[in-house]
Length: 218
Image (cartoon, rainbow, N blue to C red):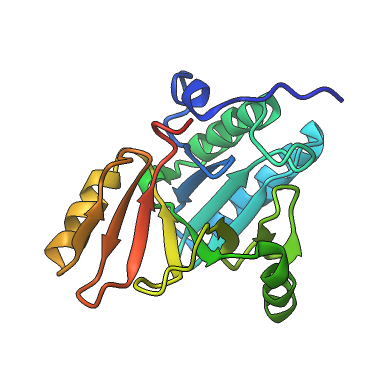
């Protein structure tokens, strides 16, 4: 089977995919069905469609009526045309049962660890978390539930700042709203030099988090 890679900007320019948002090499959708049983019915119909297409998403049902769908191509560890095609099918299935779409609810959390010798500490974190290593050297939960862990290579120690921070990837069309809310809640901007790719924020005691999107990345 051949795979045609789809970049984030390419996906964003495609028509008919308003239910979906790109984050971290995958596309995500959230549907409200009105009841828990109807959410289960929608999830089952998506599973049947996935089997027909021989391309399988992650599906999560959440009380009271929410179906979360994540699409990525596991072989390539990124987004391909197969994901786009199945996304259109999933949206059609959701529309048939009258489900409403809430695409901006999604967010993906990562944990970033600064290190002088990444190879020296990666095995520890893999063991203590029970994670596996992906092709990029990041650590991921085998069940896809916990946040991914990535390692930031340092040239010199950074004793004056925290060495572990959160990355929260959000839909690009709510990023500035999320930053504004964090600032209103007592946060500060450490740096917006790389916005819209990410804003570095800190709480009142200097603990940092990056609010990230797919935009303006090289």
